Image (cartoon, rainbow, N blue to C red; front, side, top):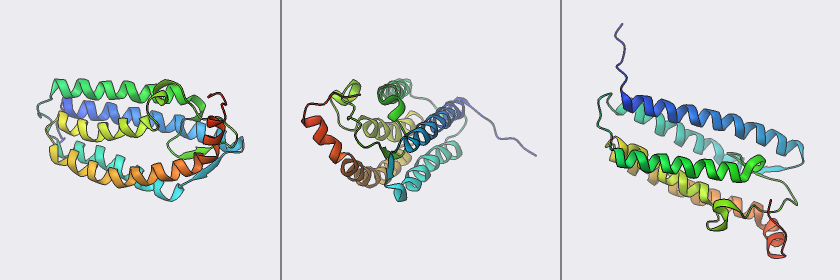
Length: 179
């Protein structure tokens, strides 16, 4: 049986996959705690589409990118910067961060960290990741494909999330403090 050669592109992809799996553990823990505290999940029907897109993105990259593919160092640095943004979002949301739309009635909206400047910073980071990582390895068509698939999903998710948070926006405009 012949083994497939692994190169630096595959090592990078495996690190990204490990990061995502670790984040899923955190997200599931936070989701359980929020639901136990009386939170509600909305938009669960579209969640599997995001899981499929992200898992397919990584699997496709792993399958298509050759072990000896050249790595664009500048784009890899940009991807690492996006990871810093991802960590910033997760750290800012803390116990409220989850990969699902889970909202705790009465909890104030988070207005610190990247949320001071952007309403949905995580979705910007994810859009950047889906495009930049394939470009690191010259797989421009994967960047285009995943971006085209991600745009309508993300726009739908933002509408659902904004609807779920609309009652809490009133708290924000009434001068409540953010958590």
